[in-house]
Image (cartoon, rainbow, N blue to C red; front, side, top):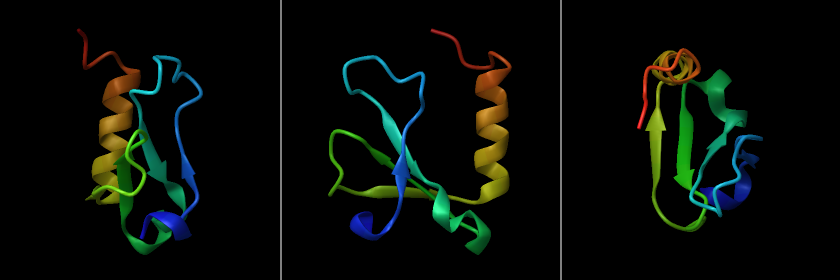
Amino acid sequence: MAAQHRWIKSSYSSNGGACVEVATDLTAHGTVPVRDSKDPHGPTLTFEPTAWKAFVASLKAGGFTA
């Protein structure tokens, strides 16, 4: 599955490679695959678009802090 999708990672990603990547080309089909950028051939997690949008909105709002 990993090779046929257009994977992207955040432009804010500058932490030495500890990132996640998202395949945005499947959102219209009802799925948002996410993977570890250090392991592109490893497993992926799949989210519903509404759940992914809520997660991203929460991140942007500062909902997750260290």
